[in-house]
Length: 371
Picture 1: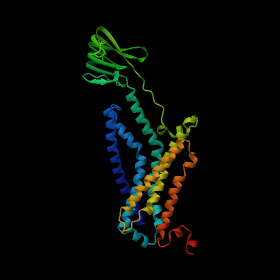
Picture 2: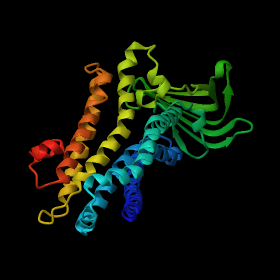
Picture 3: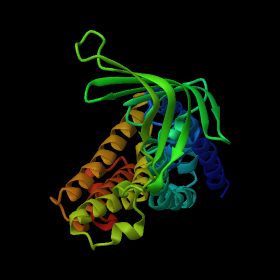
């Protein structure tokens, strides 16, 4: 039908517009947050763009769910407002006839949401953690650059090298400040070199310099001159951290070899499976929720939509927490919320089919409702 094609076309444009707006808001928020982490030294500023992209990919499933729900609501609200639904009803069609064309549009997106939640979400989280851990586990030699003060990964050593010859591993005019156990030690030297030791350890050897140790106002303050001074630099291998629940693949979540992590794994799996089911429930609820009474205004449906989404998502998160804590079995917690959403959608749709009948009679079969 022409109306069904027009409905799917308008849903496509509206979903794309809503999704673009949500992604823009998300990216802006992530830019502010990740640049703040970079300014505080928690992440490498050079990795900021990659981290923003990974975080955006991770939240695409949630953004698509919200976009699908809001777009369905916006399109149907406009149809009621512009009296297009009157033409629909005058053609002998009811609100239940909207389900098929809307679901034909929504099901491919729900499948995409499921794939994003099951596979892209853990991959993006895992890559983000690896990038952050690699920056935190960097060795101090990797931070040495000529003409710049550099702080060690644990913020206990500061380097400054005026000139650096990478080919010969030689450095000139070196400044090294150590702060261990509340005691400050500063070493300066005119020349030095980077020394590689067995076991992968690296050291900076300072030649013809001076060392200041302690506080100048304290009696144990010392000034030492040296011909050679070695300061060790811990060279750490980048180890892949143990994956968190949100970073595990489906296979890892289904692995029951570790009883301690079983509840957390099942809770994470419940959330990933529940996201596409929530998208399905929200789309069905949006169909009757979009009804607009001209006397009540056009924003009543939006108010209820926000309320429905907040309740639905919070109930899903609450169920996930209960399963994670072992207070609820995953096989019991996976279906009640979504079943309740489908029942609510069915009740609301039946209420909109024939508003002239009392609400409790609308839930009865047609043969009983006439009696």
